[in-house]
Amino acid sequence: MIRIIKYGTIFWICCIATSMARAHPIHVSVMNIVIDTENKQAAISIKIYRDDLSIALSHAHNTPIAIVDTLNDQYIQLIANYLKKHVKIESNGENIFKFDTIHSEIEHDICWIELTINYQHELQQLRITNSLLTDIYYDQSNLVIVSKGDAEKGLMFNYSIIKQSISFQ
Image (cartoon, rainbow, N blue to C red; front, side, top):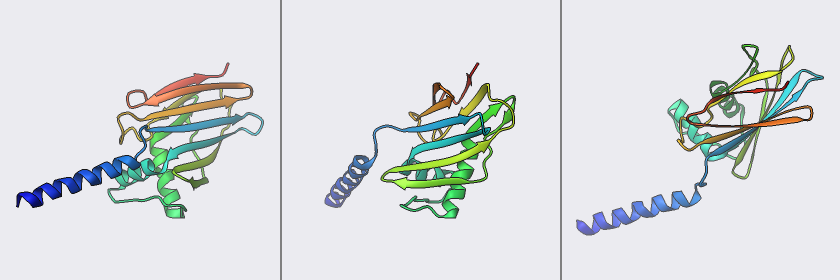
């Protein structure tokens, strides 16, 4: 009996060590927002680790979700719903983070998400909420880079800082 417990313990230690070897040591996402003042659009691209996004979607839906090399419409809809819950971009008190189409692709261990939002009035000041993966990882960092014309500004979000403002005056 002790031999079975001993080998069982060794087995689980090996399983944990193997899974930890595949995990990446940092939890980070990067969001780029490029504001096109001429067309009143903002192009948004998000770079997020595929395994982190799979865990977040699984957690949100209480069912295992594994993002594979290709994303079907069902996965893209799950990603869109997750983004709508965890990202908000406000201007003049109005949430402008509204999108109809989303494009996503997998490149190695990274999920690239691209979308475009339209806005009506000039974007001088933005209030950004970004809580991507902060419900999963306490050490999650979310970098947001906003470009408007020649100006570029960056923000860093984490578990304790999920809302920040940025202005282009």
